[in-house]
Image: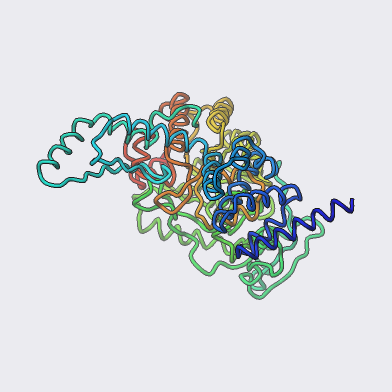
Length: 189
Length: 366
Ligand code: SF4
């Protein structure tokens, strides 16, 4: 019992030291301390192992908490998941793995968005448009607006690119429909 | 009736001490609720200093006071950008004894969370008479459920009786109650003469359980709708907010099936749909108050209007599925989107949204 209490106190002290060193906003420090003991420790292990920067820690903490709420499990369970463990136990540089961690958490937090975005990106790639034509999708598919950008140097190139767009009229229309919600996969809904 | 609300105290503004509303509420007040008289009810509506959850505490403090500004307001959703049903709002109360995790009042009334009910609510009738005189040819639709639930605590206040009675005697006016309760006893005692519509917000059982605290269960809402329908009221339903959690499509479709099993779709005035939308401020306030609510941590992203909504293909895909089911039940059953852009409306319904006034007239005349 005493040993457990000592261990908890040591973790709390380590958290405070980490928070002070990284100038972590007080609200985050308080939320960290409010977690269960196992969750506090698991989060500390991630923060120290990957040498997270303050902003990265805050983003990761938010994502982990939200994932835990949605799944109805403690945050430590999220951090023990296969993908996260793989990153934590990986051999790459700490900053590289920190970035990987955030990407993985974000993909877990928005799984259907990830699938939809990948599906639309694949459809855009499949059009095989010239490099000078860019299909700009709305950020995080937050709207149904699709922009098509052309970069041209001279009239002849511009004409050629406009013709290329016209040649892909149907395909581009399909992309716009996908962004707007058509052809959604049932498992995305 | 399944809803049982709790009150910590009743505050009555001195000037309204002898109002009919105060007398009715005091007569029906549960034992043990303190009654206090205050010079200005607006002061009692402010957030309680030192309360861990001032907004939640405000919900348990009923305040009877005089409304100083007009009762009739334009629908806040009504703008050229949004294709909503464009109606007038009668602000008869502010805040609500129920506590939904997504409720926009958490942000809108953060500085003013007391549950206020206006003793001079009959002044609304004069305002409506004037509006009716100025626009005699127009069908006017008046909703009371914007800043409060229309029927919560109606057993105490009895306001619905006066409202239904007023509208029953006016041509071209339609009253709309919007509720998540099953407090319909007062309604059953009066003939609306077809000029009152009662609408229920419906959610799947999963959303009710996790997020719609102290509301009536969805089955009780549908059962209440059946009863008021038989008593001569029009009924309508709001699938709003639609929350796009995993499995939502299945649950919302089952909810529609339950609804259509209970009520002939041909007798439903309309169904409105709207996806969950939260400003970052509301989301922050809601997450602080309900940190364990899984419905507040879905796949919402920032939309161009500054609100967080389920990303477009997910949200629109859901609308389309629900629209299909509604159409299958009754091709003539009116369905609308609330606070969505015309392009989303076109995608879901295959046509531009009707002008707000046309929608209002159709509903008022239906
Ligand atoms: S019933 Fe309506 S007004 Fe009341 S808390 Fe829920 S959403 Fe808000």
